[in-house]
Amino acid sequence: MDRNRLYWILQIVGWVSFALINLFFFSLARGITSVQVGAYFSLAAFYFFSTHAFRYVIKTYNWFSLPIPKLITQALLSLLLLSTLNTLAQIIINWIFDTLDPSDDFQPIVILVNLFVSFLFYTLWAMIYFLYHFLDNYNSSLKYQATINEIQLNHLKSQLNPHFIFNALNSVRALVDEDPKKAKSAITQLSNILRNSLVVDKKRTVDFGDEINTVKDYLNLETIRFEERLKVNYDIESKAYSYKVPPMMLQTLVENAVKHGISTRLKGGTIDIKCAIGLLDDLFIQVKNSGQLSVHNDVKNDHSGHGIYNTRQRLKLIYGKRASFKIYNHGQDFVVTEIKIPKQNSTLET
Image (tube, rainbow, N blue to C red; front, side, top):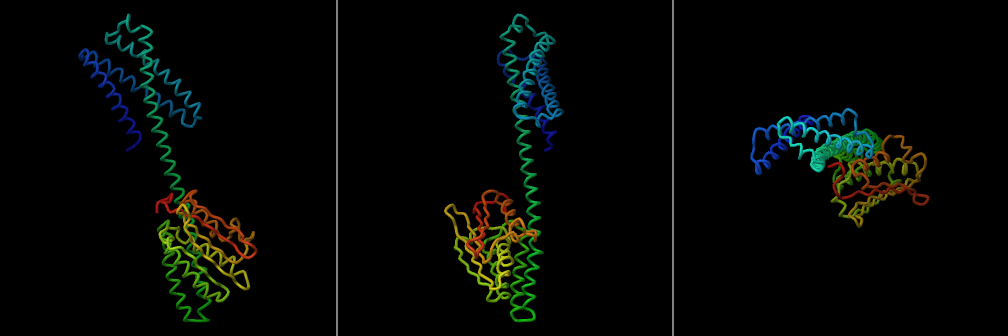
């Protein structure tokens, strides 16, 4: 429902209900006459217009942009002013409907009670109005942030396919002339990888089993290309297959290990992939590859526009602070990349 329309409905229903409830309790004690009906509906009308005027001031002078202490101060002063005006309005209404009793209505205790009751009604109205505004703004902020995250995530995912396809085709191209039979097998593996890579555009997370199969197909292609220069070892707990991970995440890390580690070494090297479950049921993924992390392949200098930076950003967008990412040198010959992924639902639903 439109917010402005909802406001008017609540205003009308609320203050009409105020008049009817007061008339009901008054009728239990003294009965109802047209005078009382007119008096209570007039008072309800004053509440209606005075609270609307209060809302107009709040919106016109943009009170919600004020610091909280200043907002509270101005609101309290305004509520006191409204209560005073309402108390005066009650006297005028009683005078108009000839129900004013000066000996009773002008007593300090009666005036203070009317002032206090008016203050309570205005405070209740203000609490509802401010609470609704803050909750509505909070929900709008969440929706806005979710939209921004979605746009960023889609942008990051869109960077993966072109780069991955280019590297995979290079692997197959090297085999076409040398070994047509292996090239045919490699094309089959490549088709499997490309089919799985299409998931990047459709899902935020995929089954770990699907991701590791993509990695194995990719490394099989690279093993054909590098031959004895590339050795791959897997150490994967069976429970890892019950988890979900961002699509192409592990494959991107492995591709980065091949590009910056194995391919830069004359003797090649090894890639060790280890997946284990932690004490808090988090999935820990470790990719250890031959090579050294330097300024030329560091996260901040990933000139390809994706890779490590892409992975870090996707983890942040999907899981927030519940996921972690580390990359560091291990000794003089290895680079280790570690990722922690929670098993619980992600920040952005799958």
